[in-house]
Image 1 (spheres, rainbow, N blue to C red):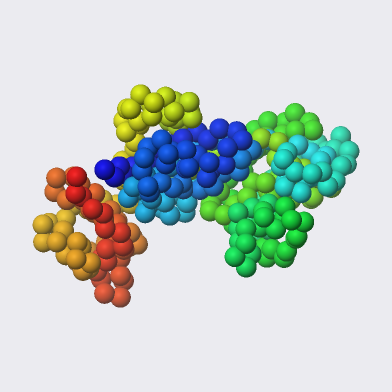
Image 2: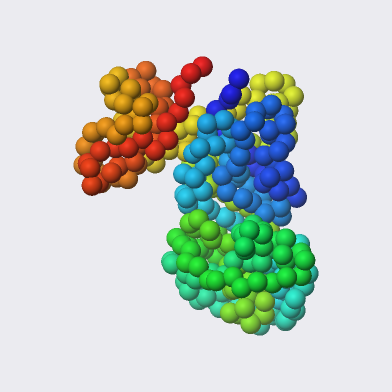
Amino acid sequence: MSVNGFLNINKPLGKTSANVVSIVRRWSGQRRVGHAGTLDPMATGVLPVCLGQATRLASFITESHKTYLAEIELGVSTDTYDTEGDITQRADPSGITREQVEELIPSFSGTILQQPPMYSALKYRGERLYRLARAGIEVERPQREVEVFRIELIDWRPPCFSIEVNCGRGTYIRSLAHDMGQVLGCGAHIKGLIRTSCGPFDIVSSLTFDRVEDSFRNGDWQGLLLPMDTALEHLTAVILSEADENSIGNGRPIALGNDEGENYCRAYSADGRLLAVLRFLPDKGLWQPEKVFSTRQ
C-alpha cells in the first residue's frame, strides 16, 4: 500500500541526500521516495524526505526559503570550498578584524551574483559538475542571480566566524564563504554547515537518523509522517463543492474568484481530504488543477 507524507530528517554528517533517500526507500518498502533540497555530505540538518504522492510537492519546498548556520574558516581555500577538498590557497588571516567582516556582509545580501562551485550537482552537457571536477576537468560556470534575504554574523572566533543565512533557491553557502574569503584577500572555506530550516520544516522538530531507524525497526514509522499539505501551508485553502471536485478530477478548470491575486491555492473536499493544488489562469479567471491527488485508501 502506498504511503503519502513527509519525514523531516536531520541528515547526519557524511551521508549524501541520495543515501538517506535510498535507506528510507529500503526500510519503508515504498517505491516513490525522494527529497526536497540537496544537502552536501559534510552538511547536516533539515532534509525533507517525501514518500508517495508527497514527491509531487517537492518543488513547493525547494522553491521556499532556507536558513543555514555556517562556520567559516579564514586563511585556507579549497577546491570544494569546504573541508573535504584539496587546499588551493593559504594566507595569513590574522589581520582580518570582526569589523571588516561586519562591513563586508551587506554586500552579500539581497540579489547577488554567484558562481556555482565545480563540486556541485548541477549539470553541464548532461554530466554532473562534481563528476567532471573529480576527473580534473573544469568548465565555465556562468554567474547567476540568487537571493540572500538575511545574513548575520553570530560568532567571531578568529580565524573562524559563524553566520546565519536565510536565502532562496540555488544559493550555495560554500560559494558565499569562498567569495567572502576572496574579497578579504585571505581565502576561506566552510568548516561546518547546518540547515536549520527548509520551508515549513525546521530543525527543532526534525528527527535524528537513529530515531527514524528505531521507528522502522519497531514498525511504527508511519506515525512520524507529516501530512502532504505540510508543504502547502503558505497557500490559501479552499473547500470545493462536489461538482467542483468532479471537475478537477477530470482536469477541468473551475471558478472560485481570486480577490487576493494569488497564483496557487490548495483544495480540499468537504470532509477534509486534500484534493489538489490549483493554479490561477488570469486570462480566463479560472483555477486549473495543477496537481490532483488520489484519495483512494
